[in-house]
Image 1 (cartoon, one colour):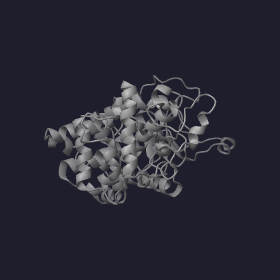
Image 2: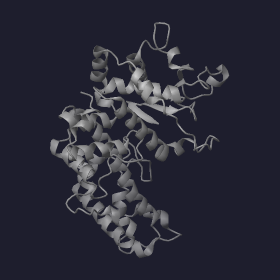
Image 3: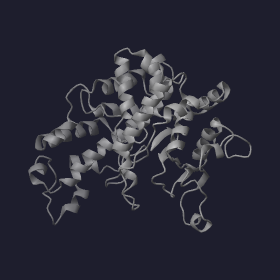
Length: 383
């Protein structure tokens, strides 16, 4: 899926999840759902058509114009708290992305727009496509998205009026995808506040992922005695008493089972929600996490990635970025520098597996910034 803003996404019509709220614009699938099927579906079919021309353009269509599409879908996300997916065939996907680019970018051109969409589709195919074909019987993971006509469609797409564009951006600039906001900041220094807010969410999710990886090592190796002998646990655990680790009050069980930090003592999926209470993590806890990294790295080479090449920067240093009331300029610069230099494993806050982030685009923006290639960042700026 391709993220636009808030919880609004665009996806191919190859696999349509009827459990999510959706718009379907597809020659093959752009039809209403049978009434009996609606009763058992978890998601709402907001709008459908075989072509965008049947959905946009007058008082008699679902959407008055381009701005109305994004306004209404954003409002739907706000009202329901749910994501909305715009499922498209090849032509419809090129059309909605052309309209989106014309809406958010101040002065992008056809070549830049084509490059961007190509990178988005490639990232989707490589990292995200397989996630949506595992439990529905559709094994056609080789389905290709044809965007060969995007350049022509982009040239013919209408830009919203300056007034409508300004209104949309004023209302939604804090909920856009990272990349255009980052491009704007790197280009002109504008949208710093919005960039901090977006990065704070991404950093939180990445730190959750990181801490759960450490916790996974803890639970996976309760019985690995060549490892646990260095942990100073209260007892030796084997197949008869492993569950008693939950009551162990020594340093590392106390760290990974701390109910003030963890929503549940067990494993969970990293998110931007409340699985981990970062405000409850103390300086002592951070020292224990660092100590855990060192011990596990001594036992398994692959775990040594949690010890960082650049000793003055650790991923644990970034906890303060999300616990502070407002991210400081120094913290923002530290995050961007960490990402831009690729010097150690801490540089992954715009992780490749995040649906909302095109990591190839982020890397290109940071590379251009370091090379002082203002032309590149300018063409993807919002203002």
